[in-house]
Length: 243
Image (cartoon, rainbow, N blue to C red):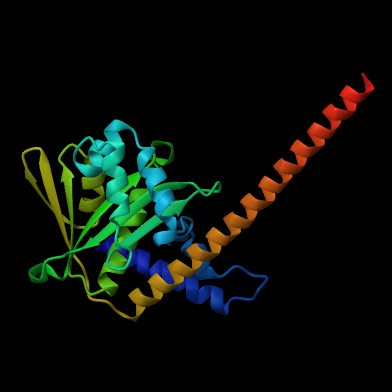
């Protein structure tokens, strides 16, 4: 759990630093934690359902196979998205500047009373966004949320050939058991604390602020694009009138 503990400490220290530092001077905690906070991870609600579907439907055949454990067709993905329970489970996402979901994680809480303190983790990252550690960041975020929700064991069911997912689990300290073409990874989570709750709160606030900035930026560039189109059309009309 070293990575998760570092993630928690970095987030909390950054938040405390931002609260105490002068407005014209970057917080020391913020500088130390910048590597963890540079990827804002947002909790997704029902209003993001269509974007989640668009993200999953954009996965190629191999990525669908690794994410779901079978070659999921469009209709199966659409059914999966339609059945997402945002009240019971946690869905996390990472947006790029174009407000495209480039990575999505699903923390599914157990439906069995006997395993009420267990949750399953699943993640998908667009091929264009690979190599940035987004899957690992989402894993840490999900583990943090799970701990705060009282989950004691987070597990991953993955194909044994899904080396990236299993590597993330191993680095977090999970025990991986292989059974033929499939593997199970089990990660025992620490109990929630003041720091874990603060880390989740600060992380969500940072992600919300980041998302709003991206929304405003996209609206601004869309406005400029539309304005350029109007100007271009006006020039074309003037050119035709003068010919």
